[in-house]
Length: 209
Ligand SMILES: O=C(O)CCC(=O)C(=O)O
Ligand SMILES: [Fe+2]
Image: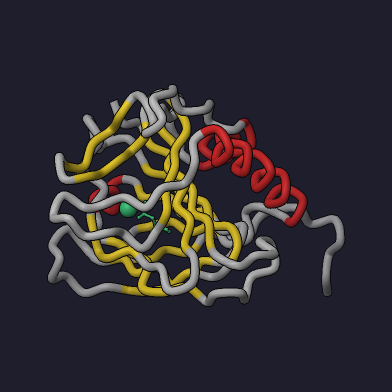
């Protein structure tokens, strides 16, 4: 029987140590977050970065917070300003609220990366290790089209497990899984209902400095 008054979130799923809360954000919360993320992208426009090796990434990115993750031929790093020279916008309140609810730590993040996956975009297997102290967790929020998330271990060669991340899902990389290899193999472009123009947004929160 469907309990209309049951507001408890679903139990989390474990994917090689990554905790996934499916449907953490309801439709209203997703729309509210999307509006705040559009403001972020207006203040600091999405850009297609190059890897240090000179390859254009398929994902377009922007950031919020004290520092934003950027990459170019000089390397991967956290920068205090965006390409137009201004400070990054503040981390949206709706995004901070998710960190406070699921991160399990009592310190707020100082960096929020906003990834936009258009048709055909993906992200290769990598570790998040540009942060000063990788003991702080990474909290990842998915909006828009489904994305196939792959998680392995601490070595690139370790076996991996995959799961579709849907709009409103939240993943937490903490403990052993904080430095797990992970990536997005592909998205189902146009299948989500939240972004009328299609595409997937992923927001990650980190303590970078
Ligand atoms: O898009 C995702 O779900 C993962 C993004 C990611 O791994 C990253 O930004 O470091
Ligand atoms: Fe990552």
